[in-house]
Each structure stands twice: as structure tokens, then as C-alpha cells.
Length: 222
Ligand code: NI
Ligand code: MN
Image (cartoon, rainbow, N blue to C red; front, side, top):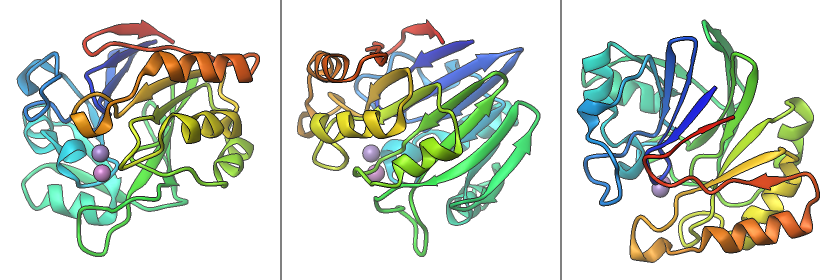
């Protein structure tokens, strides 16, 4: 299946004509390789309502008749702006036509009153993909690895707002995913990080883990 990186924390998963988009922050992203009207989506998963994650969700959802999946408060926010949405919450799991979504915790602000930021574990056809959202390192990533056999982990490495390289390397070890893709770095000066430093650290410390640095606009097979 195809994994496309649109910069920051935005990725598209594509398989069997279904496109699932994570955190589509494009129009305000200086590194975005495409405009919001150039992306397709059937589903949009939004980890929290900070502008660099909620981004162009409502526009893209409306134009594509895509379903937004998020925590209840974020789903209500986009629902109130005319997008079709489905609210879930941490610990909940639900089936969709591509597989299922499990809402994972994330230690971060939600960007909406009374809400909670989250990560997503998505069974997308044959693969289990974990998008960590914005989060600090937490020990229950080990529990996530016990609950799900994660094939691909998308982890923030930019520090300041989220895990930096050192903590993200620990996260990669806790999760045990054979493939890790870094995100949430180099979009702005405050989150400068060298993804090759992350790659070298993880690959030298953990046998059997590949870190794949994907450039904005690049598609990789997973
Ligand atoms: Ni955030
Ligand atoms: Mn962020």
C-alpha cells in the first residue's frame, strides 16, 4: 500500500481505492508540497485541534465528502462547520470499511475545550499503522505494542512541543514496529531536527527496525 507524506504530521494511506488522510495541515504549512484542493480523501483522522493538525480538514472533508474521525470534541468542532464527522474517544475501537480505528492516548493539549489530544492505531486493510499525533513519550506505548502488532509507526521527533529524537527513539523501542517514519520536524525553526540523526540512533540501537525518512511530497510503499 502507499504512504504519502505531505509534510509536518500529514500523511495519506492509500489502498484499494480508499484514501485515509491524517492531520491535513497544508495551506499554512511552508513545506507543504500540495494545496488542499489537490488531495483526495475518503477519511480524515484528526489527532487534535491545534491549527497545525486540524489545518484544512473542513475544506478537504466537504469537497471530498470525507468522514472526519476524531475525539468527540474535535468531531463536534468540525461537524459544526459542516463536515461529516464521527466522534470516538481514547480506548475506543470501531470498524470501518478499510479495517478499524483504535484511539490511543497522546500527552498534549487538545486545542478544544474539554477535549483530549489522541493518537491513532489504524488497521488499514493488511497493515497496522500508528500515528502518534503530538505527544510526549509515555510508558504505555509498551501497552499499545501488546494490544496491536504495529507494522508502521509515525512518530514526532521535532522536540519542544512533542518528543525529540532521544525520546522518540525510546518510543520506537517500546512500540517494536519494524518500520518507523519521523514527522513533526523542520516545518518551523522551533522544531528543527535532523531525521538522519534519528535514523542512525534507532537503527544502531535496535536491530530489525528501519527508520525511513520520507520527504514532503514523497510516496513510499509499506
Ligand atoms: Ni499540537
Ligand atoms: Mn503540532
